[in-house]
Length: 240
Image (cartoon, rainbow, N blue to C red; front, side, top):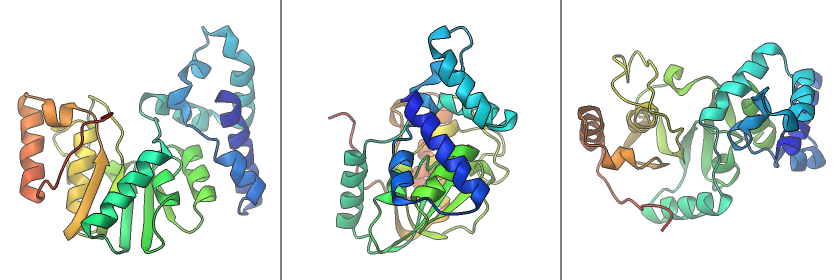
């Protein structure tokens, strides 16, 4: 995976520097990108087995890009395409017929790539290299390079939101939707997604089990706000 990631980074940088789209063969290389969460040891200087890949990565990334990639190992875990396909099918069966759709924390954009033709996709991705790869794999979509906590669009701007939210016990500051750091990362993503999705729309997300299981005040408050914003249509506890 590390070698495939380094190869994808090289293609992404070449396309970026030449200000061009990726060729079909280059897109095939880019599609092997799995994010750094799958291979965090590449950034550990105490793991000599990864020194060759680590050196290659330092050669092609700037210091800022390298640091951003290293930070992304905490929550850059991507979604099996079979699960993505099943989620889009379920969204269609629920009644989604098209319109603007949001993928927050989009990674390389698997949900965007597998979206129906009627969906006008917008992805949000914080890691610069991952956002570049998402753009090259999904030239039909808008990919916003920013943390979701800084995304500013009007409430109800989307007909649907779908994706695999990043998981973390920590919180990020969102001046509108998490000003007091009340909600952890995954619950903040879900709550903000609900605010940004229009009445009558759908929010479908993969989250970690504490969203439903947490008994502390913050977890209960998060579920209470979700219930105020939307009706729960259904939930599936994976990997059933």
